Image (tube, rainbow, N blue to C red; front, side, top):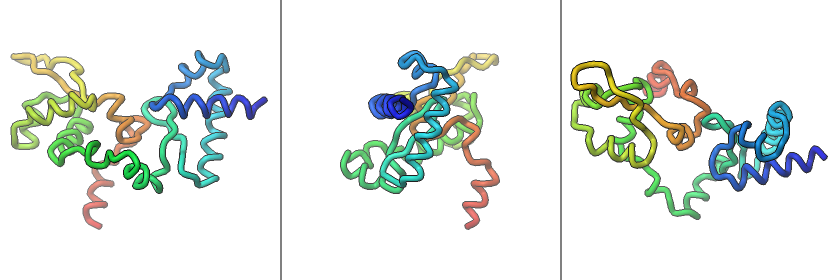
Length: 175
């Protein structure tokens, strides 16, 4: 019976194409969250131990089946998306600033970057990597920007706490 439940979860994760939350799986399957968590943990361990082309990871508050990073080059070749999915250096720079300083206004972003950020903000908004999270309570009430769930999915993060610290980044630059 347990194998049938694991097969069910495996099929759901495969078909979903985006992170599935435990609550969503509970509603779909009728299984208890604790049982779902145990089954997913077993599946994750099996996939990792097998060392195959797929893994299951906790991403953006849910679980997602994805290509093993060791095989991602081949997956990109098949899909032809390597260039299409890349962000420009300006977009990555702006996204990093927003991720670490959020919530952040456009003038605050531009003060850090030293250049106009209209185009970059539009691109990041269009790709749903950032969103308007409110307005700053100062004259003019400028928009505040923050990252989205899609940001977490795009970078394979469970939550923002998985972003490297500034010290970790400085160590990598020194190497």
